[in-house]
Length: 183
Image 1 (cartoon, rainbow, N blue to C red):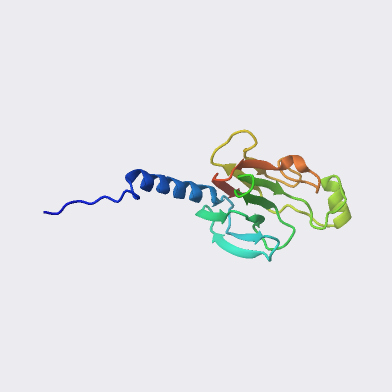
Image 2 (image 1 turned 135 degrees about the vertical axis):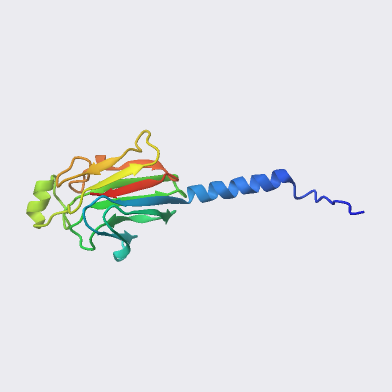
């Protein structure tokens, strides 16, 4: 007869505990970005992370969605629809190792804006613009400072308009999924 053996070091409880810990670790180490193209034409999504060069990540035809694009703990960068600096930016940072949060905002600050205190002043000083496409950020869970942001036109109230416009930053738990809708 075959007699089952037991190993006192490996129990069902320890296996379940390990599985839960692994799942929790996975959940807090990344956030998924879901891209939606509501424009009437194709858009290209570009990413700049940690101040490194801007690179293309995906093309989306009109009406097309892309699910999911994971960003990992420590990510700090932006997403845009053109590689040039004169673009609407979805800026974000994932800091699950520190405060456990996902920080984000929309920005239409004209490139080269250093010391200006309104969008019109920044445009005048730089001769540039910072808006090219409408964007909406929609967290999967809305609560507290974790809110949707929309920028439909140049000068929108939901986006950074000048460098010290710090009231525009939003924050969610580090494992929230985000939908970025273009147009």
